[in-house]
Length: 111
Image: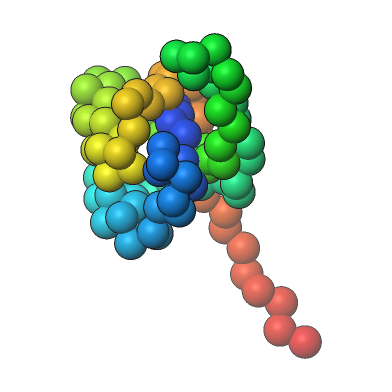
C-alpha cells in the first residue's frame, strides 16, 4: 500500500479564489476510484517566485491510500487537480505504508 499526498491550492495564481465546483468532480472521482480520501483544513504554503520574492498561498492537503501499483493513476489525479486550479506545477508524494482499516464489531447499548 502507498499513501499519496498532494496540496490543492485555494486560489489561482492570479489571486482569485478557486470555486469548489472546480475541485468537487475530481474529488468525487478519487473517492470512487480509491474508496475515499482525507482532505485537511486550509493551511499556508510559500514558494519563491522567478523574481526572487515569496508567494504565500492557502492550500489543503489531500491524502489517499492506494495499492502500490496505482502510482501512475494517482499522479494523473494530482495533475488533473493542477489543471483545474491552473497551476504550473503540483506537489506529489508517495509513501509506502502499512495502513489498515480495522473493522469494528460492536453492539449499540440502548438504555
